[in-house]
Image (cartoon, rainbow, N blue to C red; front, side, top):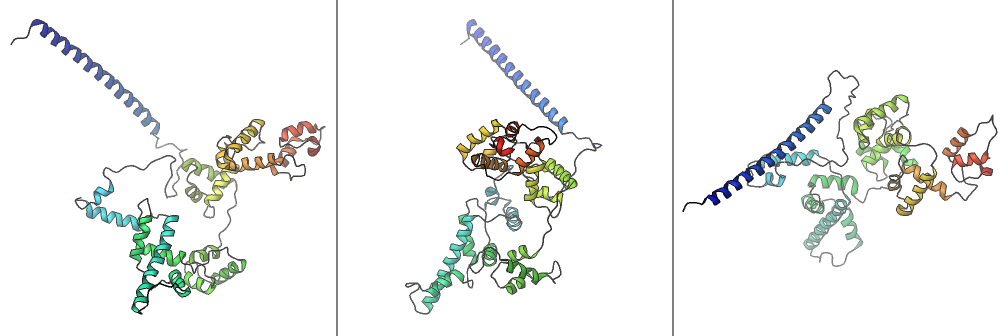
Length: 390
């Protein structure tokens, strides 16, 4: 059946309209690609650094850099597929997993430590019950003091593979604890025989005396801990016996701190400390930066507006100073805490003067000119009256 002229015209009109729509879509798509290419060119230009540029900071202290809000890259295939029995890469994936388990350090979590203690007690319970059956007794029908001590302190015959399975199941992140890891953690740190209380000065003096004549790098810490005789772990003995010099800040180390923060930011204090000095700790670097060096931190007295923000924030967050400081630009959590204490003690005229108050008073008062103590009180801004200031 031949199509009528009207049908042909309608089909042609539809084809032309579809062609126009397709061309329009292609044009929009082409414009979007051009815009993306232009954006990429700008990024490449911004990232292009000349080899002759002399002001580029070149630092490399090793380790990992933490980038805030960054996420880990995803692999083309999940590790579970690579480790499946049908995977042609199973043997290589297993070797990689073994290498990662042996080299990557995962801090022990609280639930893992609790599971470790429970698993060891469960193993000792099993061992005690087996021995009781061999002696013809009825297991732990009547728990005794001797049995309770056995559950807590026994280390002989423990099946660390069984312990490893129970500990690994407690870790929701999927990190596997090997039998050897569990054994070392229990025998070297978590066993009840160890004393984790604060060290006395006599203990510190004694452990330093024990290592005084030892060759550095050749100290037998097992022998030192045994001779100390106060049930301390080997790591605790090392921490209290080895003297670490205190880092003294000067203009050179301050500049190193600025350079390191420029390179690594304020989320990588371990790497920053490596660039400063072998004696500088990450905590010292962070404290020095936030209290003295950071150009964004204000060191002047709080303004009335800042006091209002501080009162509003403390009404909401209480004593969560880190959260409060986020709402007062240029102030650290320590500054907010100290200022809140000052405002709280405003009604007490005998309260102790702070270092900031002393510095502000000395900077404001000119000994060679008449002093308007009311004006000085306003500048001080800590609630002290003119009579208290003068």
